[in-house]
Image (cartoon, rainbow, N blue to C red; front, side, top):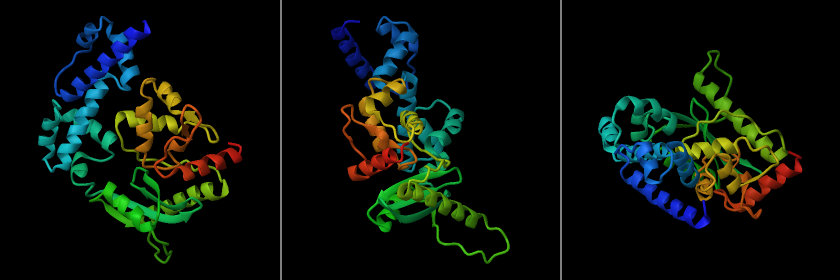
Amino acid sequence: MPRSRASRVDATLLSLARRLVARADESWPLSTLAAEFGLSPSAFQRRFTAVIGLSPKALQDAARLGRLKSALKAGSRVTDAILEAGFGSTSRVYGEAPRDLGMTLSAYRDGAAGELIHWVVRETRLGWLAMAATARGVCFAQFGESPSTLEAELAREFPKATRVESVASSASSDAPDPKEDARAQLDAWIAALDAHLSRAAPAPALPLDLRGTAFQMRVWRFLQGIPLGETRSYADVAQAIGAPKATRAVGTACGANRVAVLVPCHRVLRGDGGLGGYRWGLERKRALLDAERASGG
């Protein structure tokens, strides 16, 4: 379609997206939405997804999930929070919440109460690095100015979880201790990541426990597939995940990444080749990229 008309359609789609978010508890049949634009349902969905970054249904789901999280944080009972968020039934919420929240609804409401998280901190070539993991995998890997600031950041992410700092374990006990096994595993994981950062060892392939919106997860999964030594632009990522108009949203998703290096948001650059932003500082981003290029990928 002509550029001027396409621009008007895109602006109207943005307005529609705001309505869908504001009235996420209402039913919006795809055929009805498509008719407003004189398009078939499939053509409308493709256009909407290209401009907004999510399909209408995914956008409503994300909006309801946001309301659910806010209600849970405010201390509402789980059933009440589900109703307040606009979900029509509890069965679907319970099926999807662990995937989107990384934990049960009640655990999220309680600040991850009952969640066991082991964590470790060590000094690397790029400064202090903390890594934390649940039974599912690494949920936190961040650079910081000191061990205390990293511990505080972890506490903000999981305020009521049981956070167990990993220390050098002794092999004095004959009986295996699952907690000691978990600590030893985490020690090995951060040692492997440190070796990658400090000595150009291969990047470790570790299990991850990623927690984000549906759009963020799409971005982070794509980032994990960018080969070592290569980069992509924010526009490249948006195009690759089927949301070519969502370049700015891709940048926001990169900034929300909690797992440094293992989800390599440092490999995403501005369209002109500039570094763009980086949650843990542009010097670290430049150092990471320089090291990966020097290693020959």
